[in-house]
Amino acid sequence: MAYRKSRDLESNLEEPFFTIQIPVVSSDNVEQVRITDAVHIGSFDWIESKKPCILVPGFPPEWQDKETPCQLSPDGNTVIADQTGYRLPSARLLPLALAIDLHAESQGKTFDWASVSIATDRNCLRKLLRWVNGKKGKSYEFRIDLQVLGRTVFFNRWEQKVKQWQAIPVYGHSFEACFTNRLGKDSVDHSRIIQYDLNGLRIIVGYEVDAYLSNDSTRIERTNTTATQVSPPIDIQVNQATTLQVIRGGYTVPQNSIIELKTKSLGSMNKVKYNWEEGFPQLFFSQTHHHYLGVHQNGNVLEVRKTNMESPEMRAREQRLQPSLRRLRKVLGEIHELAVKEGSISLVCNAAGELKVYRRHTETTVLPDYLQRKYAHL
Image (cartoon, rainbow, N blue to C red):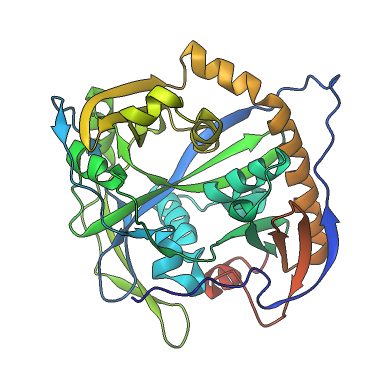
């Protein structure tokens, strides 16, 4: 697929009708914003294929400890910012919905979509957190398209460019390829979906998984949940021109085994510490328990620094994040109520840090027909 030009943030939108303000949280407000009742509810792999194809539940890459130093090759110059937006732009939420429903079906249940307040990508939460923290500038512009079923608000990730050019040598993907074992044939990406309560908001969050930590307990769970291909591949009609192929296969792993992988050059670490202002929320919103940082010099990995979310230093970071989380929780509630009232709307944050609300043209939808038909009763 060729490189696409950047999309206009305001494409296919009407004039803005409202501006959301960054919430002011009193210093007297000591309410703790916590994630509770976090559970895994689905997963899938994107498969390298001529037409869109996912494997459900898929195979998360397994972490493999290796001796260091270990020399990596630079990543390629092409960066896919959003695999789902790249491979299925017309129905970005469809793989998430299918993975959730198939996971529930495998347990003899039906997923209760009516209990969900917000369904989103982790990326959308991170963008909104930057905004409530007052980040401004061209690099902090974003758009999120919203649509509603009942009182469930779906946040659709929107990127100006899903396929980008990377000129500076980086080693993130090479680090992952070197230190993990991917069992899924032709799998290029593993996405996981969790559900939790955020101070009264029931939220579904989808996110990319880099690796999982295998041990005796994860091997037992894998044995109990392994699914060979239980039925022939099925095609889900997306629109007249596109179908999504769904293959059953893979296994699930415990939530506390998930690892976020990062790399940092030794030279830059001598000058600037790892950016936990960006890194910690990524772990928090996905309830990822492990953070492995590959410290390298020109691609030569010298050590892997391992951090656990249960450590005192990470607990302290969560506590320092509380004022930001209080602002975010407040604005998520406001967005939810606004979307339920108005219907199909979009949030656009410009370089000045203004978060404006737009109505979309009526013919546009971010929800797949599959979801609208199946849950029209909500």
